[in-house]
Length: 253
Ligand SMILES: *Cc1c(COP(=O)(O)O)cnc(C)c1O
Image (cartoon, rainbow, N blue to C red):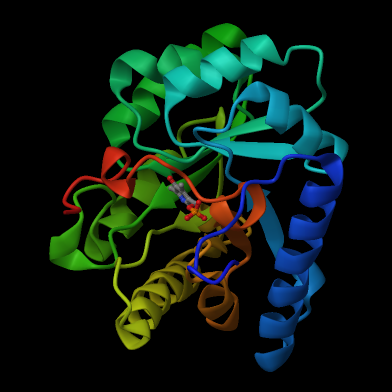
């Protein structure tokens, strides 16, 4: 991070190697504070808005997965980089008419927030003869954001998802509140963990490994301390984004 609190853009393989190592060291330190092993935490690099030329450098530096919020952008990059061995993960809200695109190439979908979308994905995956890992997105901050199931709605959806053979449930995903108030951010992470723990008590088979995908550049250390199994980190690896976050999340100023 520079003096203005923003991350300079990574422009070379060495930049990416350094940024990945720095993020990994912060994950390891946060895990150690919580008595956890940092190597149990998956770092998912989030590459939205970053052009393919720089994504190639990131892959060369060791990124084997790339997370994209918007399906159209992911489809384009997947096409541009068909010669590169990398897995594509969709982490943003999906519209039903994009289910076919996701089913065609994504290995993982982290923003499953309705049975309608699950049905559309299942149908497309069946015809493509593919399966995909999914995380159910939970709205852990109540009023502030629109996407994600309410915590109370999660058990019912998990029970239904058991019937969708092409969707492999890996756990739950959330976006914490966008605020500098770290106590409120942590509370979101704890809500997600509580939903996971209750789901496990009710029927452990329904939630698979029961992983928690939570934490981004601004809050991944707190997320790891609160039990994150996957952190989704963009700017701390690729550099600050020019586009405002309101392009990606409803309800932000
Ligand atoms: C962009 C994005 C991230 C990563 O945000 P950074 O601030 O770049 O780390 C994480 N999760 C989702 C759903 C995103 O869209």
